Image (tube, rainbow, N blue to C red):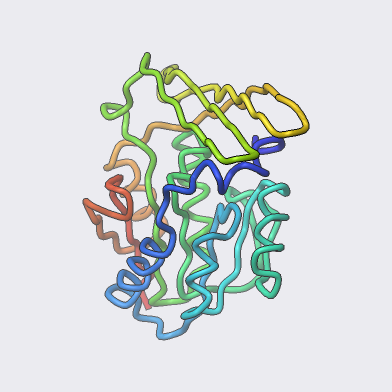
Length: 234
């Protein structure tokens, strides 16, 4: 994933207000964190847009599986440390006051076993009193298969149409992003497949509690998808 689309990622998601979301994250940390430190790790950090703002308040690092997205993040904020690793089994040999996984990236672990494994991995990187913040993907009853979605970019020298149909197989949401990209150099077409697990709210909470975290759920969250906040006991 993102091998060809990484170059257009920030343009496609230009509608996201990363600065406002970062401000809300600061508020949540202030409300729930008890460790007193300011080290923050963004798991599945993508192109580093949240960190671009959070670095003003915290000592930040990022982690992602996509080398292409990390290359963009490193160019954006070259003084920030980024790790190329899988969120399911990374080991950075250090602990943080805040670990977060936003924009529903947790869905990419696909299965319940992987969910528990991933949450445990992230919680193992917390200091006592630190918090884990996870923005969930859709639960099964909120996923609508058979619906058509589109996103368009209409810049002077860049035209993009990204179209997909939502599908489902068991507890997996599936969609193929069909990209049509036009630049002065020509027109390119490619397909990018995404598969994300559909986890119940109770399953997300259980994974965090199973890792020894005290769990709070925020119904609104950052983008109306909710937010799970788990605090590691001191």
